[in-house]
Length: 102
Image 1 (cartoon, one colour):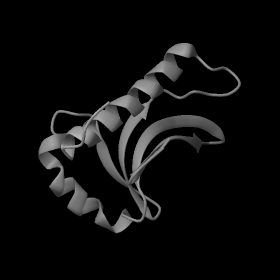
Image 2: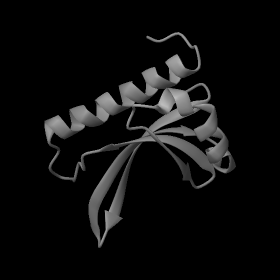
Image 3: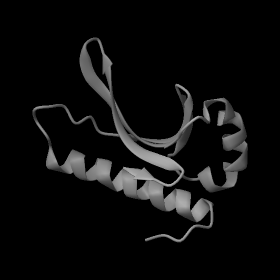
């Protein structure tokens, strides 16, 4: 899902050939070298959340871990949790930056 200035993206990572870890990222393109700056800038807003700041190749991402959704079995509850994580990240970003939510 693309928005002005950021992208919400679901990512799956393999360990030992199997999908093990899944995340929902709010990705800021081209900001990979700014991870420490972003951690300091949003320290107060990140407090009490499970949101992590990670370098993701050339980008920086605000990340929430979500349950693995392993094809071809798409557990409805896990899909719902991933979508809720996307909504949480979007709402968090808008509130942290004084943007209108909705």
